[in-house]
Length: 181
Image (cartoon, rainbow, N blue to C red; front, side, top):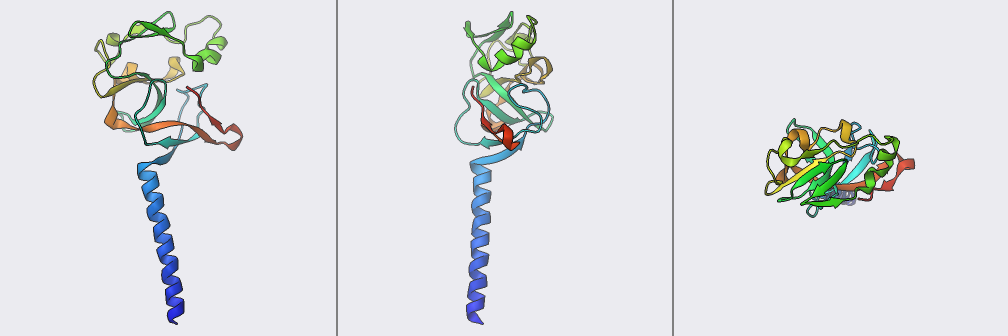
């Protein structure tokens, strides 16, 4: 009888230990997310499932997940870091006066046949309302610039609202990929 109790106790310890480890990993290191909507097309598709990494600081052009002001979690691309001056002119991104190529948009731009994907604006003309991205904040945009609610509309994203970065699509399995910046 005691042997059976010991065996049951060992199983319970193993299961509880596995659950604790899973909780710690999900809480502090990785978590899954489902892409909702088309704001990151063509890079990401509606209903793609991704892994969010909660380690490290986001870098320019990383894809981040954050808690938006409306209470939902958004997935967007980091365009501006704290202190950056952001401007779009004639569908070209300028950061601190320097033009940047956005290769992740090329496929989408080709489909538009000389139409503008990103309308011209300065950071001050957006919901950010400043000349520069505020301290401890990010300026983010969806890749589907015409149909994305992003920092142009909701303002800069405080770093404490950022859940993490993501670049691995694991579902649907036939669409498994690592997204390049």
